[in-house]
Amino acid sequence: MRNFSEIKSTSKEQLLDNWKLPVLFTFLTLVLYGISIYFDDDISNFGIAVTLTISILVGILSIFLTNILLNIAKYNEVKSIKIPLKKFLRIIGASIVVFIPMFVLIFLIVLGATFGLVGITDSFMPILIIIISIYAFCFIAGLYLSFVNYLILDDNKIFKSIKYSFLYMKGNLLKTIWLCITFIPWMLLTVITLGLGLLYAGPYLQLVYINYYLELKNEFNTKNE
Image (cartoon, rainbow, N blue to C red; front, top):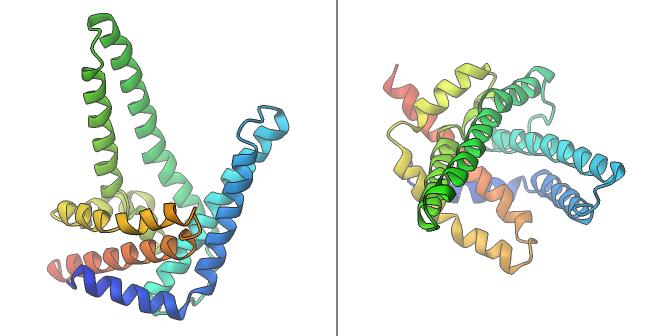
């Protein structure tokens, strides 16, 4: 398996050769986010409808962008931006099967723990510890599930994608956390540039992560031949 420096170097070269579509889709996403912020305080039916529509559009753009970057990582070109309907439905299904129940469960745990501890102690520390623990759980669970959409776009079904996302991450969690830590300077760049840095940093970081996924996939397949 290549080291992170090699993966990042490859990703930079790939993005340099194929930057137009990733930047365009990222720009459109940022524009939609900007519009949604404008309607954040609008609780009228129109405002809610606009916010909901934008959320759906952002989700669709995100899937297309992921598919584009997966093409670039695998073929060093965008062979096609088309995504079969079944893959869209599988990604939506994976969100329903995994992410929505997980976040609902976490919300209920936080709510229950908060109200429970309020009656027992006046100290905020136990509540803070619970919140930090849940955030840590969400982060780790998110990493284990982070390859699901890539696997679905590679034409795997929902439960197979979930299974292999866990298998690829097994034994690589600390390595993946370190990779995420190396992304922090790029995230700071986006803050300093008031979000404009995302036009490059967004596609680049996701492309690095997709290339990392492909490395883990190849390593897993090699070990299990």
